[in-house]
Amino acid sequence: MRRAHFDVVIAGASLAGCTAATLFARQGLSVVLLEAHRDPNHYKRACTHFIQPTAWPTISRLGLGAAIRQAGGQPNRLSIWTRWGWLDFPGPAGHTGHGEIGVNIRRAQLDPLVRAQAAREPRVTVLMGQRVSQVVVRAGRAVGVRAGDPGRETEYFGRLIVGADGHRSRVADAVGPAVTSPHGRFVYFAPFTGVGLPDDASRMWMLEPDIAYAFPNGEVTILSVMPTLDQLPDFRKDLRGNYFARLGRLPDGPDLSRAEQVGELSGVLNYACAARPPAAPGLALVGDAAMTSDYLWGTGCSFAFRSAAWLVDATAPELIRGADPQVGLRRYATQHRRALAGHHRLMSDYATGRAFNPVERALYAGAVRDPLLARHVAAFGERRIGVRQFLAPGMLARSVLANRPRPTAAA
Ligand SMILES: Cc1cc2nc3c(=O)[nH]c(=O)nc-3n(C[C@H](O)[C@H](O)[C@H](O)COP(=O)(O)OP(=O)(O)OC[C@H]3O[C@@H](n4cnc5c(N)ncnc54)[C@H](O)[C@@H]3O)c2cc1C
Image: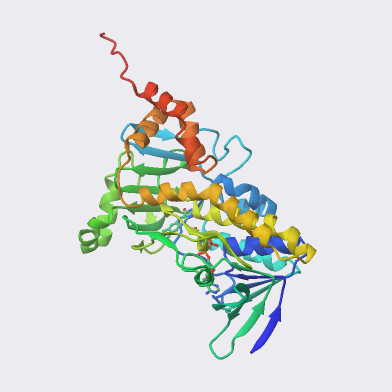
């Protein structure tokens, strides 16, 4: 069997893998990026293209901000329909007050951009058509991976092995089983041109328990419906009819009178939430490989960008010194857990298909009426603050005040 040696071996050349490869290479480390697909323009189909503003610092660090805008990336200001009214996330279009911009950009554009950026780095070797089949472990430590067509495989050795191979990660098998929770909703979505949306803003309908959303990205608008799983058998009896009927019933829904469907109606029926330890001896997981959260909240891409950058910052100093990156890996795992584990637990709980609980009801209803609470809910939705801060007693008290009955004019 052929053998090759690099400082860092990365499985999966999508958002997380390409980000890690580019940033490791810029620190002077040699990287091999192994991608199962053969087409350099391959992109993830099951995605609705809403990229949170918290991804922006990493996108800027990669040097991709201008290219994303040129490729049609559209600022993604969000409004959420609730039974109490519309909740408009504050700030001028796309800006959060933190100098960061969330964008809607099609993965057909984004993935090749991120991959081409990695391939431009002289220290990155991108190998398409190299499906990783197993992690090579010696003395309890990951030291390499085996990849390539059966019978013509190569072993790639590195001082750090990175699993960026998505929610069905093969590399993650080396760290043990994921903690999974089933998804209680399914989604059908399709791209359209000519959809009428006020301000061209992204819109989400929290219909409790069903959900729908419209994400425009300059070129097309993705329209999605997300009913609870118990409705799937009836829904499938007339897929297109039910999909359009649900879009047509949305309160303040999109104007579809000039809409033209420009791509297939796709469904995702079973996409369990899953979390794994993000690090093990000699090995790290980034993006969906580490944590696959409910796609409803549009957080997966930003988690992929952010976790890859955290990994590089935590482990590169040891790798550059020629040391074992164990301290850095522990630091990465801690940062990952602190920043994302609480969000993941809450998202997984909501993914069961339940309606809002009393606390969420109070906060969302309050946010419709109180701009400060709206900013608070926005900061949480963008995963800028954690669960504890979201549920801070001061904010809950403020939501009780915002929701108290107002005296009527007659009284
Ligand atoms: C219906 C749906 C809608 C979504 N909408 C949004 C949204 O609007 N906003 C958002 O932020 N997130 C969304 N997500 C989540 C988002 O798609 C993922 O979180 C994101 O793509 C994760 O990026 P990644 O780089 O970790 O993994 P991926 O993008 O999944 O990439 C994994 C890469 O690894 C490769 N690979 C897999 N196995 C191997 C192997 N054995 N060897 C080598 N290579 C391998 C794959 O070919 C792929 O290139 C959505 C998800 C779904 C299902």
